[in-house]
Amino acid sequence: MKPFLKLLAILLVFALNTTAQTPFRVIGYMPSWAGNVNQVQYSKLTHINYAFLLPTSTGGLQAIDNPAKLQSLVSTAHANNVKVLISVGGWNNGDDSGFESLAANGTYRNNFVTNMINFVNQYGLDGVDIDWEYPDAGASANNYVTLMTQLSTEMHNRGKLLTGAIVGTGGASILNSAFALVDFYNLMAYDYNNFDHSTYTYASQSVSYWRGRGLPASKTVLGVPFYGRPTWESYAQLVARGANPYADVFDNVGYNGITTIKQKTNLAFDQGSGVMIWELSQDVTGANSLLSAIHDVVVTRTGNPGGNAPIGQTIWLRGNNNLYVSSENGTQAMNCNRTSAQGWEQFTVVDAGGGKIALRSQGKYVSSENGAQPITCNRTSVQDWEKFTWITNSNGTISLQGNNGGYLCSENGTQAMSSWRTTIGTWESFNYGAVSGLAALSATTAAVAETHMAVAEEAAAINVYPNPVPGGGTFTVTLPHYNPKAPVKASLISAGMQPVIVQQPNARTFTISTGHVAGGAYVLEVQHDNKRYVKKIIIQ
Image (cartoon, rainbow, N blue to C red; front, side):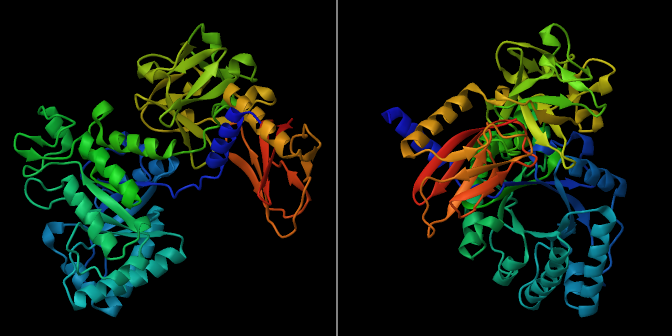
């Protein structure tokens, strides 16, 4: 084998065997009294905590503020694959008497837990976030654990989450025995003092304090503020007054700018498992958004958070009106009104870098036109307006969000398509499918496949029959060498370098069913007895 092929093969082996990490959490609080459900950047969040629900001293619940907003948040967030939890308690002017009373009494605890189960079911929530921030030491600390034990059992038995908000440092009244009860803890690494209340140093100290006490990294979420002190102005208000989005001090107000927010997000990647935000309505829109700064780090550290874009494949897009999206050959604004997917209705999904994708048809790229006019497919290169975030919706459809924050809209096929909608509805949701044949194999992936085949030829060819494989059919694989004491792992890898089938047959001859795998070109990789066999597979 040529030296450069050996090097590329080694790099491919490393890439294909990298273990996927647990998705990084980005949790934003939304208060009942602030923020617009329709202005949330859902594609950059994993969880939203609705604040606050307050307990009574006997385990009852006070009336939730703005229930219509909560209902709207749940439906909109779920449509964007974002979980919603109810946050119980909060600062409440420092009054924790409700928690103190109910946690100390078995009957009241049972009342509270039952009421929380009913509340979660009523609003279709994904879990409960307990913001009993300052339990008293001694008996109260033990009562906290008893309450969280009951909640943990009942929530987890129902497939729901239990989380908590705790102070950045000095949280002695949160006993170590509580760590096993929650899915994760949000560290309120802010309000340390009246000015430098949330420095990077304090964030690091907060993470070190809880990790040092035994809180696992997988349950450690670092809280960041979207406001400044001592004035309590939001980041948006400070920027409007002239604050530098990249600085941390303005007019004697201490806040977190983009640089610090990115540093803290990297800290959370290195020593924790997520970032928590208080609170979403305090952010700005556009290039200076702090949530976007967090998202930029997430993309850099993990690639596309959705991880589902079929990079390298040629696909069609079909709107809710059951008609296909057309590039119009780049001669006019795009439409979603075709009854079949011909050349103008086929798009190659291109990696645009930074977790974004671009769509290419007939050699030209789709442009959002920054939401200012109907979208087109006439660009010769990929700039910002030609980059999109690929979003997989909970119902199996996908949506595409432009860099302007707007979603591609089919306009139900009645007029030219646009990219200015701020939420995902039926017109902003599309089905897609791969175009059969070698068209789905990008030039890069073709080179990869050829390199794989060169490796395979050097190692010894595996026998695959039939190849091409009829769509939905099966094919048989026979290894040239078999050690019954060594495991066999077979992976069918897509043009986007994503495994679509993984089997461990542990036999010299075995079959693989293509099931619902889309037609196109794939790479079969079989690992056995310290050998690697690779072959290009065509599914018709």
